[in-house]
Image (cartoon, rainbow, N blue to C red; front, side, top):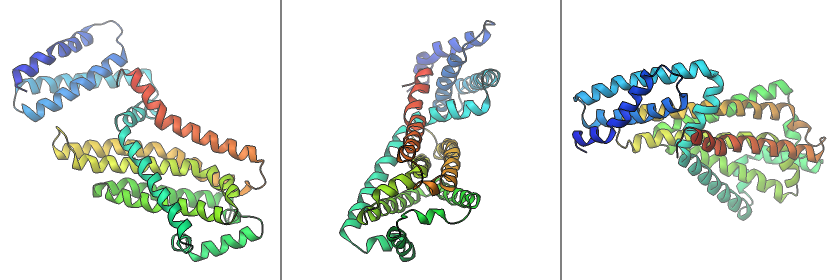
Length: 321
C-alpha cells in the first residue's frame, strides 16, 4: 500500500485516539486498550514499509502515549496478578488458539497410535514403560492394589519430586520450540504414546477402572497442562517459520514472549497436579468412587474453561473476534 493511501485509511483512528486522551473526562480502559492494539499494528506496518517516514515517527510517539495510558489505567483499576491470569493470558490463548487446537489434535493422534500399538504387540508396553515398572505393576494388580506404586514415599517427598519432574518436562516442551517446534513435537509423541500404553496396559489386565480412578485425579491437570505447554512451544517455532509482516527476529521475540506468558499460566495447574498426586491419588482405592470422579470432572471443567472458553469471553469484552 502506498504511504498516502495508508495515512488516508487510518488517520481517523489516530485522530480519535488523540481526542480520547486529550479529553479530561473519565476514559474507558477497554476502548483505550483496543485503540492501542490497532495503533501498534499500524506502527509495525509503518516500520516495515515506511521506516524513515514521518508517519512512522508520529505513530511511534502515539504508540508510546497509548501504552502509558493503557498500563496506567490497568495499574489503577486492576490487580496485576489477576490481570495477568484472567485478562492477558486468555487474550493470548485467543490469539494463538489454533496452536492450542493443533496441540490437542496431535496429542490424540499419537495417543491413538499408542493404543493400537499396545493392542497389536504384547511387548510394546514393556518397551515404553520398562520391564521393572510392568513387573511391579503386575504384582500390584495380583495383590489387589493396582495403584500401589503411587503410595511409596512420603506425601511431601512425592509432591516435590512429581512437581520437579513435571515442570522440567513442561519447560523442555516450551524450550524445544526453539528447534522450529520439532523438539516439542517429539516430546508430545513420546508422552502421548506413554499415556496410551499405560491405559491400554491396565485395560488388558482388567484394572482400567482402578487406573481411571487413580491416575486421572492428578493426570487431568497434568496432561492438559502438558498439551498447553506444547502449544507454547509450537508458537515459538511458528514465530521463526512464519514471521508474516514482521522481521523474522522481531517475530521471534514476540513469539517467545507470548509463549512464555502462556507457559507461566500452566505452573499453578502443575503445582495442583503434583499436590493431588502426592496427597490424594494414593488414597483413591479407599475413597468413594463418586468423590474420585468428582475431583476428575472438576479438574477437567476448570482447566477446560480457562484455556478453551474464557479466552473467547475476554476477547468479546475487548471487542476482538
